[in-house]
Length: 400
Picture 1: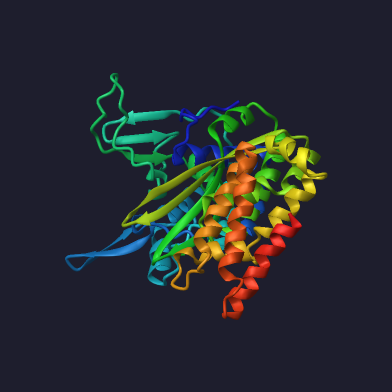
Picture 2 (picture 1 turned 90 degrees about the vertical axis):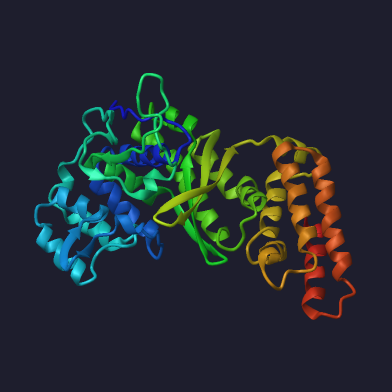
């Protein structure tokens, strides 16, 4: 097994590189196969590169000079047809890549004659030098999003870098793993108050360590579940940022459990990242651990009071769907036309989360109580829309 001298931990740098490595291994160590498969995943999605990572022509004292950004640096490494003159003409004609999730960029990568020859056949060391961190070899300047963890040094008594600002360089193999990791983990972009947020879903560090010991076939099974979670989160994120709602939609999903049952997987541990661009770099806003069990604890609690736990979960999941009343009320929390019962709905979801995650039946009673409060607030309203929502809350209580 090839080793990367990068710790497996919860940093974005580690997560994205090992995500790429696992995706690469699941395709039997073939970059062309792996990149071909991710094209459909990123269509119509956008991850804007930092200005420092984009190729551009700079003018200093009347003279022009070319700064080659990350995408074009990688293309140059993989195919000698991308000379500086060619890149210069592309930039001048505004054909430089600004969106890292560009289908055209992947197609160009796949056409590079050197891509087929790139194999990870030897260990990739992590080297510390004066002012530099190098993973593998010094082939490419790492893009800013790989520096999101904001390391200013490696604090070790054995090194002199504790207070140094280090520049990160990676080999072409690591650069390809990074890209594959980004394409594999990206969920969606959410805009709020003129700020863009990017969401990524990775395997947890513990899960990565286990999967690195498995075959490509087993890794592929775990990706089937993870990709299904990404698909589910895509429909939710961008419409609501309630962490409780996100986790409930996953934990209550009968489809995910049926998929785990089919693939004979008992547990999968994931990590959700929320990142935002900030000037010429990025900032991590949240890291949310997600553990999905094939037979969760609350199933046993539900089984004592309801005949069919799976049907119970299916009805709850439907009640939380993006086109239903609860979701719309939560989505209104940060809007100008906030629903009058929105705070009660938030409490209801938090109580339901307590029930599902902890198996505490008092959480179920709290959920029902808050839904009743929502109904009571709206039942006698003269507003037709509020009256309609009041009926929606009663329907949820009847069906669950």
